[in-house]
Length: 319
Image 1: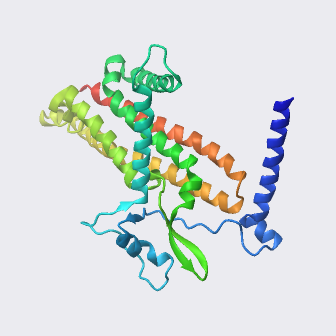
Image 2: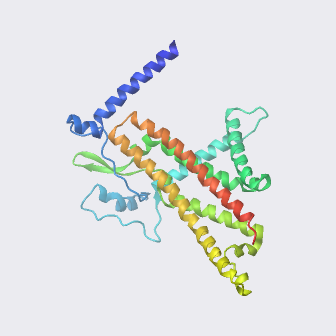
Image 3: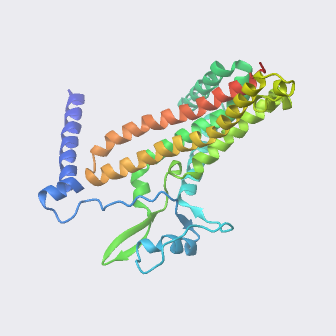
């Protein structure tokens, strides 16, 4: 009986918050003639913003609160600054280290809950890798593939769970007696094109490394198949053309990996921000549930495609 009452109370509170969120949101404010919505209109900036040092931050994002300033043009080639997406990536790395070291430290025959969770996650990824590459190669590829999988997953889920903190902390100034946020202190790393690109390059180099390790310089015959053409065989033209396609497709993987992850993470972030602006409170929870699923899918796809391409590279044979 108590459980039913608790569930009923949660349902009533959720319904009330949903109604209140609709009324004070951007849609309800316009319908009911309120002065302004509860949440200020968000600004979407695709480019990551520098947060440290302060001088660089003021130069790059100060124009958003001071219309007299010249618009920021980005960092120079030799200029370095810590961006908000970089801070997010560091935070993700710290949480991952604490989680996995805490679970693997002082292992017991009868594991506690954290150790059991870490072992279960490792076993899932290891079995996933072994199912594609086989037991021996799966163990060799496991460290890199597991790092990619968990880093994408933790980064995506951390962005969801810390959205209120992400949106609340930042730098700005008072404009007309009202505080205007210019940039967030922390922003999900997946919304920075550099982050997916870095992971794509790691995956690419990892696959090509094992391709050369498995076949030596004979691995290049996959892309530069001039043997039959040099022997005067007409079919050699087909082999050359296929090799060029293989080489282009190998490079295109970097682009597809990058924009697949960047597009999904950025779209999710924009959706969460816009729903919070239109209908705050409860309505955003449905988007959070969707983003949890998207984060899991993207981590599985990134790690899975890396394994598939690795399998093709190490098992390639000249025909």
